[in-house]
Amino acid sequence: MSAEPTSSAPPRGETVPLIQAQLHARLLNLAKQSDPALAKADRILSASSSLDLNLMTAQYALVFVAESITAVHNRRVLLKVYTQLSSLVKYFSGFTLVAADVAVPPPSVAVRMRALSSLISDVRIFHRLWGLIGLLRWAIATLQAPPKDAVLKAVAFTQVVSNIIYQPLENIAYLGSHGIIPFSKAKINRLWVVSSRLWAAHVILEFVRLARVKYLTKKDVSEQSGEKATDGHTADTLWRRQLIVNAAYFPLTIHWSLETGLLTDLAVGALGTIAGGARLVPLWKQQ
Image (cartoon, rainbow, N blue to C red):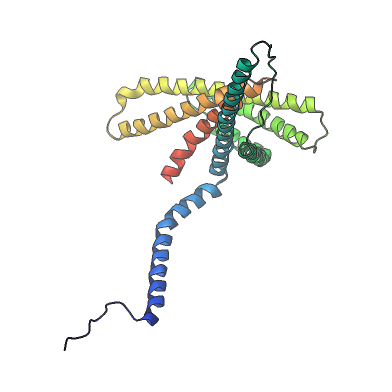
């Protein structure tokens, strides 16, 4: 007689506990692997400065994506209209067709993205209502330890004054736009423009500061070696990042400093995403 074949599979009664144990082990492993990423996200999102960077990048990225979707949608609609008009021209060859401007409604997903972007913008400005406190601390720190270089010192003090005037004007314009302060729409718009011009002044001065820092760095580069050279490389990376951020901010501040604006919403979204992302990406990498 031949022996009956034996099965390596566990009895049915033990299958369910085994699956549960394997699932539990996988969940524990997943939790262990994801905990550092969650801890990093918690540190970055819990700090007010980095939270604003995340919100800013999301705000402008939503505008950029929404405008891109709308542009593609409009292009498709216009292509369809052009095709139909071409057919009509061939059919009614003896008639004259009169062109008319037709407003193409944006896709609903683009409308929802713009709504979310506006909400984020509102939240960011609300959080700046008490931003003057931080600016005053910046002013005190600058007074206590001003830059040694005369040009950098002048730039620093001028930036401090510009920002201290800018912040209350933005706060008043924001509260007025929500009907909390009884200002006319024209006066509110004027406050937005003036505050934006003060911000533009800060950005222009930042170009002066960056240029001066670069000049002073090149002047002292011959004295750097070893560990100082490494520090110089880090400082150069930071300088380049600051230049990119400021270059993205500059056209935005000019745009908001004009009554009628200057840029398209697509350009605003792209520049804002660059300004926020250039600072946000290194932050996520370092934490």
